[in-house]
Image 1 (cartoon, rainbow, N blue to C red):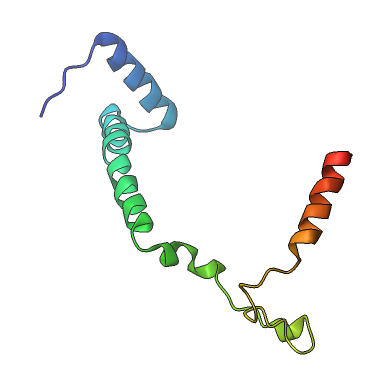
Image 2 (cartoon, rainbow, N blue to C red):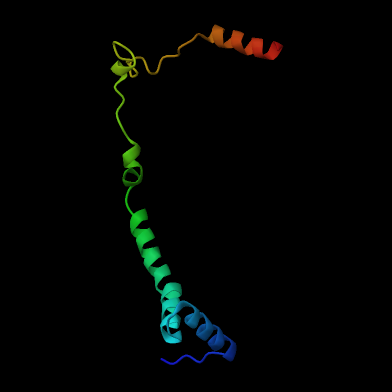
Length: 101
């Protein structure tokens, strides 16, 4: 493939190649590879990193809490989990105090 450059682009390519100590051809090839090939490689790498399950993504943040470490007999978090912890009257008095303020 032959690519025709405008005189301004050719001069800029020659000037920059001389500045960094390479040939205009190698510089043009490097710039084209960076612009055209690396985004594809980055997209493929990103896609492979983003594939998987939610657990694959968050797995390192999961753990087990032993409540005995915080509470001597254990917190018993699953016991009576559906029971209301306060009465309706208590909720109503809390609500009425908020309204009065």
